[in-house]
Length: 386
Image (cartoon, rainbow, N blue to C red; front, side):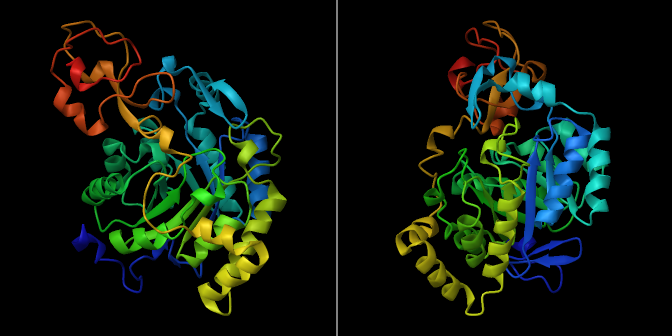
C-alpha cells in the first residue's frame, strides 16, 4: 500500500485530499450535508433540502441510492432507529427511486455550485451512481468489509470517502488494500472516522484517532458525525487534521425521515459551519483553539471527546459489530445437502434479529460446497453450516 500512497499528485501532501481541483485539508475542509433519504423520494422536498443546505454553508450535498435487496434480507425484522422501531427492509423498498431522480438532484446540487455525492450500497447502485459521473463516491461504515463493492467503486477512479464506524484497525487496512489495488491510478481516499450509533455520544468520538489513522495509513481523514451537538465534534475534528466534515441535515427534527431525529436543521448546521470555520482560522493554531474551547465547554468534556487516539470500537457501537457490517446470508431456504451457489447467497447487513454469517471474504471459499444442515432464509451462513 505504501508505494501507492507515495504517488500523490504534485502539491498534495500526505493526509490531504484532492477533490475537483481543490486541496482539502483542515484549512479548507469539505463540509457535507448528508440528506440520506430524508427527501422521502419527493423531488420537491429534495430541492428544498438542497437549497437549505446551500444557504446553511454546505459545500457538498449527499444522497443515498437505496435498493432494499442490496442491503437487507426481508426477514431482517424490526430495527430500532432514532424514530423508533421500524421494519427497515419495507421502509427501504418504499424509498427506492429510479436513477433519473438522482440525475435531477445532481443537476440541482451542481446548479447551486455544490458537489453532488451519493452513497452506494451494492453493485447496482454503484453502477448507476458512477454512470452519473459524480465528483466523488462514498461507502458507508457497514460496507467497509464489502470487498466486491469496494473494488467496484474504486475501479471508477474517483476520489473515495470510506466511513470507518463499527470497525477495527485491521478492517480499515483490509479495505484500503482492496480499494488501492482496484483503483486504475493512485487512489485518492479519505477515511471518515465515525461512531455507528444513532445518536452517538460526543464522548465516544476519540477524535485523536484521526491523527493516528493519518499517520498509520498516510491518507486524508475526516469525520462523519452522528452526535447531536452542532459544534463540539466537528470543530475539534478540525484540530486533529480533518479534511472532511459530514453531518446529517434536515429541515426539522420532527420530519419523518429515518435520520431526521439526529440531523441538524438549517440554523444548527449553519452554527456548525461557523464553528468549523472558527477552528480552521484560529490565530493561535490548534492548541490555542482547544484551550479556548475548554474554557467555553469545560476541560473534562473536551478531553473526553478528544480521547486517547487508540482505534477501538466505541462503547455505543460495540453491539453493532458483525451485525451492521456485511456477512454472507442465505437468500432463501437452503436444504441439507444442497449445493451453495452465488444465486442463493448474498452479502448483507445482519441487524438484530438474524444471526451473522461468515465475512464477505469467505464467499468464494464456500461456493460449490454443500450445506451440512438446513439454513433458513435470511440467516447468516456459518462455517459449521457447510
